[in-house]
Every structure is written in C-alpha cells, then in structure tokens.
Length: 152
Image (tube, rainbow, N blue to C red; front, side, top):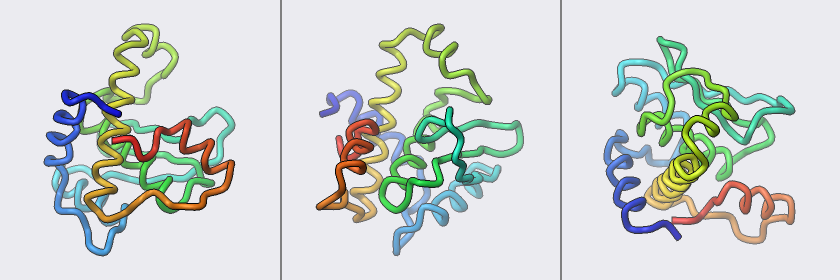
C-alpha cells in the first residue's frame, strides 16, 4: 500500500486530469488531456519483444503512449494511466534508455516514480468506476502482480 505522501502526490496529479469521461473510455480521456495540454496524446499498441508493458515518450510535438497489443480492457487502461502519470509528473521528456535512466537516477528514485504511477492509475480507475476484474486467469494474475494493478 502506498504511503500517505505518495497518495497525496497521486491525488494532486489526478486533479490535473480533465473530467473523467462517462461512460469510461481511455481514448476519450487521452483526447481531452491532449486538448487541455495543447498537444495530442497518441495511443499506440505494439508487440515488441523488448517493450515493457508500456512506455511514454515526447517527440517534441506530441506525447506517445505505447502499450502491448495483448493488454486489453482494465489492464490496458491501467498501463496507459501509468504512463500518463509519468507524463504529468515530468518523469521524463524524451524517448529514453530506461536502463541508463535507472542507473543515473538510482533504483530508489525509479521505485518511487513507479509507486506513484501505480497509485495514480489505481486512483483514476477507481474514480471512473472501473474495478479490477474478478476471477482472472493465472497469466492475468501474474501480469497484475508485475504491474501492481489495484494497489492504491
């Protein structure tokens, strides 16, 4: 469970989002966020062996969020929101070498950023009325464990 400082920072970042769409739709949220920020937030799915669950990068004109094509529904939304948190928190501003960044920042900082992004994602999904699916498969349970989905 996230500590009170992480939850407070996550709430601050959630407050930067436009109104959550009803019914919930991550694409609509990204479009509204792009309009609010004055630059598009583009979603891409890909199946690349080296791709982590998700990645955000800024090409100077747009923000791009890439998620694995195999991630759908709740999990895709969680991954996209995780990357939105990194974007809003300013955790990186360009396509980055994650390994080099981890070495430069140190593991503790990287862990804190990841905890914040996981807490933010869970808070937004809860506010949107999207709860973690019940009765998930062992593969989905493992993905959940790796992602930290549902921890807020």
